[in-house]
Length: 271
Image (tube, rainbow, N blue to C red; front, side, top):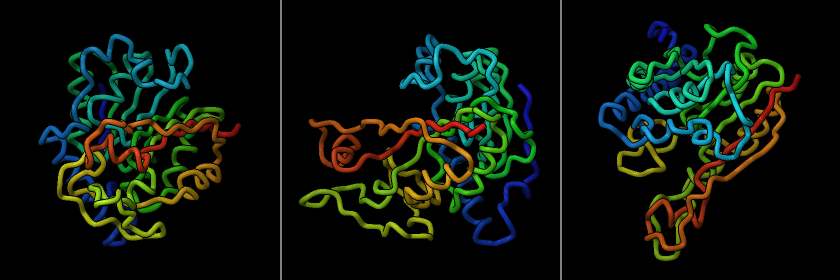
């Protein structure tokens, strides 16, 4: 299970102090979440390895097999995505900003005798990866942790081969704009759509926000438009359903009746 961890300086984006602050804050936040066993840092359960491809690819976007595919799990540490894609037959590299999250991947890989490479670096800084090195990039919810998306998408396009797939999931902008708890009539749309600064730091418990993290609202023009401008064609788009008609007010299931929290996008790099 090879490991590449660039120096601490390579974890900084640019020379601006504010840039370094959000990067360091998010690294520390995810290290802490992993240390405290947050539900987003729990490794994949044994039952998921019985049919790992179906588990990670519910929509069936990847076909019958990814055997031998070169797979980059981007900003995807935590002992779930990487091990499952490796168990499904992929040749997996996991990139994450958090050393603690990558350690979970190495632990699961060692326990299951899976060959996974781990690299600690930000999602928009992948100079250690060659052009066209991957057939598939998997990118779970994480773009909210960077202030700018153009550099992320450029790097994804660079490391994907022509015709390669980019499967990403994002927090919807309206969800990040909206209060987590209801008032008397529903959930208040609180934050402006064109906010450029990070959201107020969340210090509570919620399945929708991560304590201590710096999060940014990205407009649809950025989520979709910048992806297209980086050289991708959108082939499909889903809104995973979390709404529950019988859910209690203030829960994920209830709030999701008013605003969908996530979007999942299938894109292909143009040839």
